[in-house]
Image 1 (cartoon, helix red, strand yellow):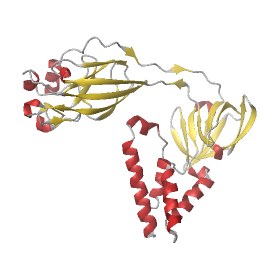
Image 2: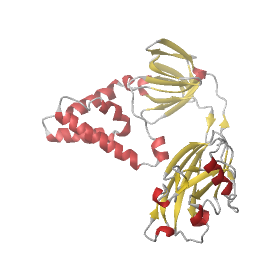
Image 3: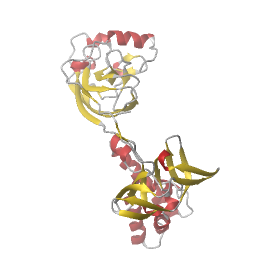
Length: 344
């Protein structure tokens, strides 16, 4: 996070003490490189099975809006068939949507439940019917989309990121250089697996991947309280990150802001009414973080995802106006912080 600091930020950083001591330091596991053969691939099938082996072809083609693109298998990171490659599923979704407007209540209600059970994957298809001429279909589609929004909000950030993405119509191919969407060919693959030669249809594939690295994330929980005001001592997470690592942070809890009275309570987001640690940037009571003793101090709040710009130990503290941090005030309460670090 090596950016030029504004005067107020530079002053705040200069006033911030070194990180807390005593926390054992651990390094985030680094990706392990795995060498793959030029045609090796792993296929995740719709029925839950996984097949690994060598494809009989050295390249696939993708028909795009701008013409045909030929992609060597050894340049593929992964590919996923779109809904157009699953005509049976697409037809099922369309039939269920039409059943939302059926004359029979039980048929409408069952279609509603079945579409909702499909989860986030059906979202984009439902959005095509938001303005349907049938008032009942339009109403129920809006209700299902609202329910899917609520489900997504209730998921933790890492769970939502790991969840299934909404179907799109075209196939998607991610290469080492770029991502392309279109129609994959061939529609059937021969693969030499440990079970012998197998034939797999594209319509049976959920995801194909050629991951060259195994990435293991690191998770940890940290408690931050009033002993960790910015002007006192930063709380070391005990996790050493490197530049480029992706860091997901979630926090909850409360802190009594005693200078404003025992009924004044702050969440990890902080409250401007409790003054500013950095004017119009970081309010009093907010959870903040930095990487290393000289790293830029950033607001975390209840949730933050960032990419580390420098290497060092991840540290947390609570923002406070200097005049209240040094006057012996007690700030009962604490913030419970959960973090997940994905190596670059």
